[in-house]
Structures are given as C-alpha cells and as structure tokens.
Image (tube, rainbow, N blue to C red; front, side, top):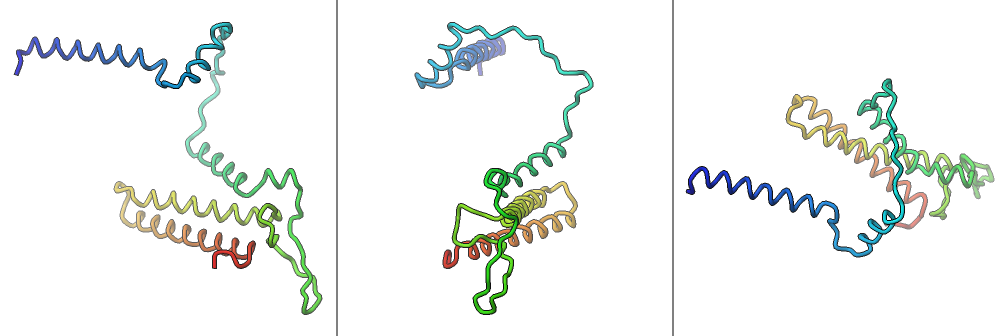
Length: 183
C-alpha cells in the first residue's frame, strides 16, 4: 500500500482529471456530425436574448397526485379517441336493423371498420385501457415491502383482477369489432 500522502495526492489528481474530462465531453456527447452542425450552426449568427423572467411568488408546484390525475385524464382522452371524435364527429351510438324481426336495435361497436368508431365505443375501450393501467399501478404498489401485508394482498388482488378484466374486455371488443379475428 502506498504512503498516505501519495495515495491522497493520486486520488485528488485522478478526480480532477475525471472532472475535466467530463466537463469537456458534456458539451458534445454525440459523435454524429449532424448533431454538431445543428448544435453549433444556429448560435454562430443568432444570440439568445437575455431575459429576466421570474415566476410569481404565489405560484406553487402542484401536488404529485394532481399531476398524476392530469396525466391519467390525458391518457384516457388520447386512448379513447377524443381527437378523432372532435374532428370526425361520429354518432354517439349506431343502430342496425335485426334481419329476423325487422326491429331497430342499438349498436355500440362499428363493425368491420378498424379506423372508425362510435363515441361510446371509444370511451368504453379507453376505460378498459385505463383500468388495465390502474391495475398495473396497483400491482406495483403490492410489491412494496414497507406496506402491511393485508394492504399488499388487497393491492395485489385488486390489481390482478383489474388487469384480467381489462384484457378480457379488450379482447372481447376486438372480437366484436372484427369478427373472425384472433380465433
């Protein structure tokens, strides 16, 4: 083992060399020439303005549960086809005539068209995807060893049931939407 003074000087020099190498390499981590051109070229003739923007003092960060709720709501809106519903404006529910009796019955799924949907079809499919995601979150909470055993069992059971229901219903929706598919 080297003397204490040599060991300390060596580690300080190694730490300084590593910090210098990291500082030099942090600006240009990629070897892609296009990345370097896009990173250097605009700033050769453009100068960013000097702004002194400050957040209002009464503005606070939202709670983690608020952020989670907004992300979950956005996820539901995206997977249920809300953008499609706003642009195309499909009917909320369809109708079909029963060939045997001639009676008109409501139809929730637009059969045979993969790229089209009724509003209720999108919302129900989006809810099943949301249920599956919440089930996975509950399964993740069930693995935490710091929680009491009864709570972990409850989370695990509810999460597994939610995932199984979401999967079964999503497969049922696909079979209704596209008859003869996945058989």
